[in-house]
Length: 156
Image (cartoon, rainbow, N blue to C red; front, side, top):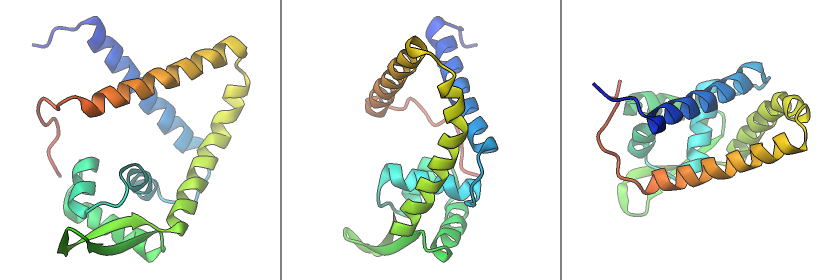
């Protein structure tokens, strides 16, 4: 049985709050991109050109699931496929200009619903938000450098 410690509790609260904020913004925003496709566009934006296998691993999805989503993105003109320069048998997926525009549209829509809440905050509260963002970015950088102890989720 895992012992609940302050870092464990803090970590759970951080993950829960970040996920709730993201879900809230997506739920209230109005955009034309299906949510699963928006997530994949954001993942491609984060990772850069990637193989299907890398996208599936990063999304904790199966390759067939990612392939289906990529086919939808490709039909919309939001991604490009190209030969992998390291292995001509494989392909690399990247965002097209239209894909970047679609992702920016989603981000603007989410920001539009969050902005009124941010506008309600006073100067000191906005300063705390800025500090929280800096700390989250530091945490993400540290997490990216830390070894993953064991897989916690299996592909579907």
